[in-house]
Amino acid sequence: MGEIKQIRLCGLGGQGIVLGGTILGHAGINDGKWVAGSSSYGAEARGSACRSEVIISDEPIIFPHVTRPDILIAMSQEAYDKYIKDMGRDEETVIYDEQMVCTKEISGLRQLGFPAGNVATKELENKLVANVVILGIVAEVTRIVSQDALLSAIEKNVPERFKALNLRAAELGLALGRAKK
Image (cartoon, rainbow, N blue to C red; front, side):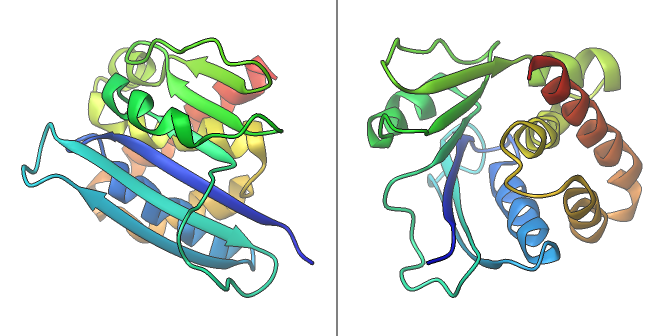
């Protein structure tokens, strides 16, 4: 049986969670994997709970919904608190924005904090690309998708006027991930 990875991105509306899931899913496709995805967000467009789920597999996906995430990407405290309970304790990874999330000590769970929002604001002068910074981190730390596949997915899913900014955000995320390994 091939490898199946379940990923949940979560945060608040306006943080680019849905776009992040779309980019991650397309990166999986670019790597020749089978991919399924879904997203959910509150009634308000900005500031309400939001999540995007992606399954990446070497074989066809039988059940297209995340049941137990292998990777949780948390960009807000509310989202972390809501979804941390779904994480197991065996080789699962939580990657979070350390300025936005205070983690709970959970034995056996790998939790890695990164300054995604801070880097987006200071290096790129645009906090809205923190989602793409964190995707670069995830790609580097977990190897769930290749660097080339991620960059190609960004090029195909981001409007032309924002491509250079988002590609730079991904590169910064990849560098952050390499530095913490």
